[in-house]
Length: 440
Image (tube, rainbow, N blue to C red):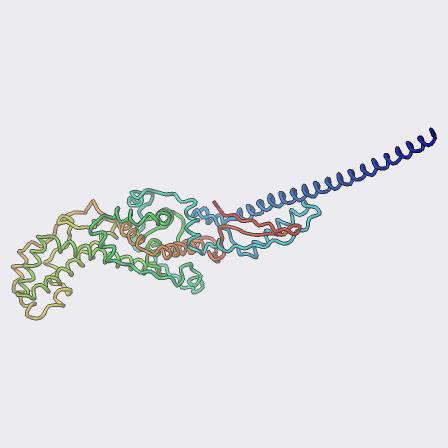
């Protein structure tokens, strides 16, 4: 009996030992699987983390290759592309980092820069706003930080004739129109400051950029060499010739001044009485109304010509004239072709007959000295700049930057090849990692 029990006990103990060994083996297998799973997860986490870290480094490296001259001259952060060149650079960064990721399957980088083109006026506006030195409306109107242009005589008329340069300008094909009547209607009732305040909300970035970096016919903002003398005028006119842009601005200022002068003559009681008296002497009867209108238009235009020249001489002209700020008189005007060319023979004879009587009338000349209050030439240009279509204004600003970058540094500079952000993806161990960044 004892022998039998001993055998049973021995068998039980043996089976018990075998079960424990199997259990331990199972636990060990599960433990190893858990360790391997943990190692796999940890490895994926490490790879994922390293991909993110290196991807961000590659992104920063791509953005760090910005154009130094573009930043120094205009405060614009942008780098030269295009996609395939950026891909080549990023793949070089990738190749230098693969050794740090042993045992990983890494594909090539694919870059997509769409949406970051500096040729897009929206992106240009964002770029110039990042480092813009903003000033107040009063600062815009005072010309603070700008100096009077020095030099004798008229500057050389610069003209771009290279068709390739013209075709690659950002504004190529873009036109613009001005509603002078709308400008005049506002200015008749308000002031330049009120006009600027009404328009500058969405254009503050552009106006500050123009004021800080662009020169005009009378004032300079920087000592850096510039192809065009009349940069403000180019933004307004958009012509390839310096002189043509000045003529366009002169003409548009003349139209504004002519309309405002006509409005003043139509409202001033003394000048209305003078105009009525002269018209009735030259053309008695109902026809005098037509003659009065003719003389009024000619007088407003004569004063406008004087105003424009006054502005170009660096002096001021107020928006709305008064008797004290009116310069031209009616006596010399009556002998001009603008008047006599529209009179019949009988009216011309009456003009000669009453010449003495007319000369004794008040001539309407008020100002005897320079007007100290009023607006400058650049104030009137500011009005024209604010009246422009925003996209056209931005595109022509881009023209100036591109032209000057060609003139100063690179003959092949082209905004079409510049970007202000980067976007790319890379495939690592079957998973795509995407990266995107822009200048801030």
